[in-house]
Image (cartoon, rainbow, N blue to C red; front, side, top):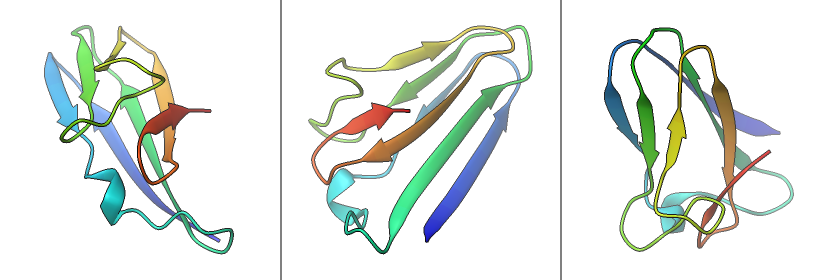
Amino acid sequence: SADKDIAFCTGTITVTLPPCANIATNNSHTKVFYVVNKGTGTVTIAPSGSSTINGGSSLTLTANQSATLVSDGSNWFTL
């Protein structure tokens, strides 16, 4: 099963993900984060610490874009 957190964002904002080390990554329990930009501003998704998102330092969502993120225990990845 998976725990889910959903952030519906409007305006220009930065959403900071929790540290990957705090996220369970075994097959029976995974944390899934959904971030949705419902506005016209830019939503920046930033990892905590030295973690990356798809190898980069952040992920940017423009109007009406969304992202689904999971962690492998070290870094974040979009699905």
